[in-house]
Image (cartoon, rainbow, N blue to C red):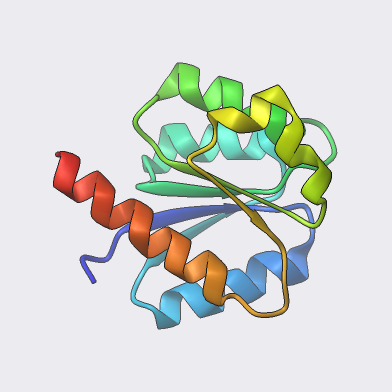
Length: 124
C-alpha cells in the first residue's frame, strides 16, 4: 500500500473511529471530518486521495458537499457511504465514484477503496 490519505466524513464519532482504525490497519493515512463543512476545510488542508462521505449530516449534508468537493478538486474520488440505499436514485449521488451502504462488515467498503485507488493510479 502506498500510504494513500483517506478523508472519512461522518457525523457519528463511533463510525469515524471504527473506519479510521480499520483503514489504518490496511496501511492508509486517515483524516476525520464530522460534516460537510468540516470536510471542505479538510479537503483544502490535506488534499486527500479519496473521500468516504456520509449523506445525512448536520450543517451540510453529503450531497451538497460532493458538489463543492468537485468545485475544489474534481480528481478526488468520492465514495458515498450511507445507511440509506434510497439515495442511490438521487441525481447528485451519481457524481460519486461509488455508493456503499453502511454495514458492520467493512469488506465491501475496503474493496471499493482499493479498486478506486488502483484505477486512479493507472489513469495517472
